[in-house]
Image (cartoon, rainbow, N blue to C red):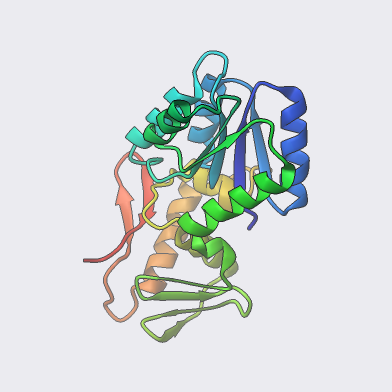
Length: 229
């Protein structure tokens, strides 16, 4: 699955430039031109990274970043600030609000792609790996093999995609709607309870032999892949 990046900026020319170069680099792109719309889009589908302009209509980039960091479901979401403010105190303010990186306009497309890859590599190493490992679960993306604590596991294609999504975002809580969009696709309409059915199947397979359950149900929120103490 391609990493999904939400670009939030009210400059049409910049949005076009960023979309072209990031799609060329293999990313899936969403766009928003104001802060309130961006918050709604984040709730509807959790991005793997946000490129966030400082100055936005209706809600500033700084305020969006603060809200992301305060929310349990998004507090670990990577954020790169895009801004014309290049002074040191502005960069410090952007980083202090929770941004993971800071790019000053104008910037080169190659620098943008490199910064995005660097943040994803640092915070989401699974995107660069052929084998994802977390909490005893290992997924070989090249050979489509899964094991837990060294024991091979057979998964149906949907459960494989669901587990991969969790492994790429360990600890992050996803609503049923977000999982439907990310795992099944936005163009396919399914009832949210479909997610529950596949979560039960995935749990039954992962937990065979009395192994501890690593998928956490968050009441009124969704599901997360958790680390066992």
